Image (tube, rainbow, N blue to C red):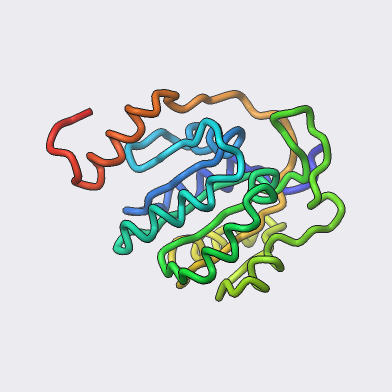
Length: 195
């Protein structure tokens, strides 16, 4: 399916402007897209625990309120973690942004349609939960506006980007969870030794 934005282009444009932001990617395509844009010590990849990316992003945002935290998740992961939207809204983490790469399919298990294929509105759900800003992104000419929102709007915010399902080359990030943890801690100045 080629309807929707090129997710690799969207993620690359976010990474190019990330500054000091911490980027956390849910399992599957969001992690591969982030790795394809260039691995970095301030990137953290979840290799399991589908549905936990939003909650982990909230924890990181609350622990590091001086840093912008952007979570990249697929629509399947976002649907599994819907209860996190209420907690995120209640916590009012002004430094937290969620980017849902919505291809309306479960990419890791065969491309079965997700609820967003039937019209479920994740941005609308976040707005109803109390997010001060949400955005539906479906046009390439609005990508820079969406990146502005992700990196600068007071949060919590959610951008639901309709992306295509075209296969992309597999770019795997580091899989060593201890390495990922230690290098993120070092990037935050919490370790005095190089992992």
